Image (tube, rainbow, N blue to C red; front, side, top):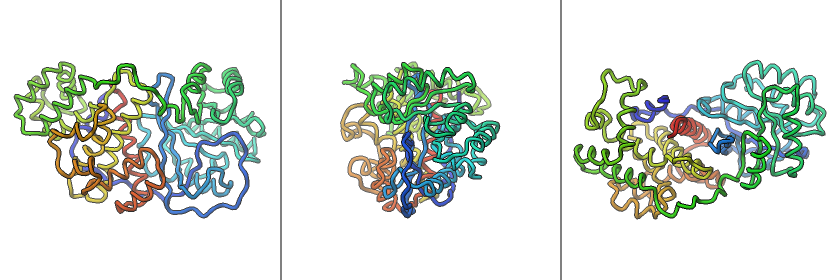
Amino acid sequence: MFNSLKKLFGGTDIEAPPTPAPTSVQASIPASAPEESRPPPTPSASAFLCREAVFDRNNRLAGRLFRLQQSSVQADASAELQGQFDQTLLDTLNASPDAWNTSLAFVPLSSASLELAAVDRLKTANLVLLVQLAEGADPDQLVLRLETLRQRGLAIGIFRQPKNPAFTPAIAFADYGCIDVGGNEANTIRDFSAAFRANKHAQPTHLFGGNIDTLDEQRFCHQWHFDYFHGKFAATCPKRPNEDSADPHKVQLLHLLRLVQGDAETPEIVASLKQDPRLAFRVLRYMNAPALGLNHRIDSLAQALVILGRQRLARWLSVLLFSVHEPNFADWLLVESALTRGRLMEVLGSHLHPNEPNEPLFLTGIFSCLGRLLRRPLAELLDDMPLSEDVRAALLEARGPYASLLAVAEASDVFDLPRMESTARAAGLDTDTVNSALLAATAWASEVTEHWE
């Protein structure tokens, strides 16, 4: 339960992201229609990692679907270019395997790419290969490869392609039955679910729905026993009925954060902590967690504050601001946006300026989502917050030394390809560095929210 505490409370030193192999392009989740042959375009050097949310049946963020994409290449590229895309995606993931330590990673691949040596280097835990059957795939050869990969511990998903001769033998080895929900009729989705679950030869299985655009489609898939849901539906989740005003608990957290970052004395901070018994309990419980490795018990809040230090306490409080009781789809997206933005800026900052403090970058990234969280203008929330001028300038005026990295984080969050290209260039970052840092930020955010309360 406390696996992420050392990273959350730990020192400020951050390793620069590893440099992966040169980046190309990965097509999006495939539809069931066959690919058209066309001369392959020339890939550019700018291919950015796209992370798309995947939810489970409990409406919890279960993991991410990872792909690479660039604006100049279409999703239905030739088989030859698709192999290049898959190779580069695999190399990128192999360079940063910690991104799915505590959550699932779904990786769409062509069946022709399963023979790539990079597949055998993948870390198998929590990884699911979503396989689109290539035209002309040899059924016997494919089955042998699927058996080998499953014996290694990789989970396999097979997309519905009933006209492909390899589909029937391949689906018997699938851990996940996959379907492009946006590209199929409701009756087809229902029948696929029933047939897949009735397959007596299948292994213990899950159903994966890709490209789900609306909440109605998600509910339909949930009704038909799907286990994982991917698509734009989460962003359409309506507000809760009581969301017109901010959560009083978060208002108290924000007040406490102001005290910690300001000139308040320790007794004043302790008195404020005592006004929130749940938070005070958390502080003492976490301080006495075995993962922190303290050699004596912490029994008082004042003692805990001295050991923690204000900077680390401010970091923790800023993360707790985004905890949500019984979060819905939109809540999870907001939590992940804030945590990933903060960590991404921190990691990129350590790459660009390894000898400078990175904590202000973390606060800049996470506070960029504060207005959405508390449903108030950001300028109003920051009005009496004791932040540095550089943090304030980046958040409110998009200027200053932190503005360029905030622009990269914001563009990466919404996966705006033209903005990602221009903001990375303006910040002096190459594509590989951004992609590696984004994987690192994803891993950190997943660990922090693994046991979210």
